[in-house]
Image 1 (spheres, rainbow, N blue to C red):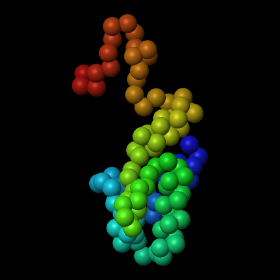
Image 2: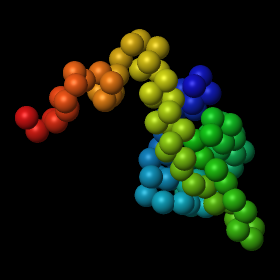
Image 3: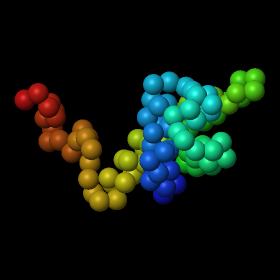
Length: 104
């Protein structure tokens, strides 16, 4: 969880994740959105990979990045559990026969 939050602490990495929400992108396509060196972008990609937020694959000479949203979801759920919060009521939290319908 701490590696995920470390990765999210930087605005450049958050922007990379935002771009990847639209679909896979090559390292070059992602780098075009930032006024930093290739080495700096490479470091950002490494932090995102280490956190498990992205995966990369080689396609010829290009490296293609894909978002792994499930890792972020898991980290956020773990974080909420630290404080005893629940993002969604579970069936076991409901009295018998009662459902949690948000439209009521």
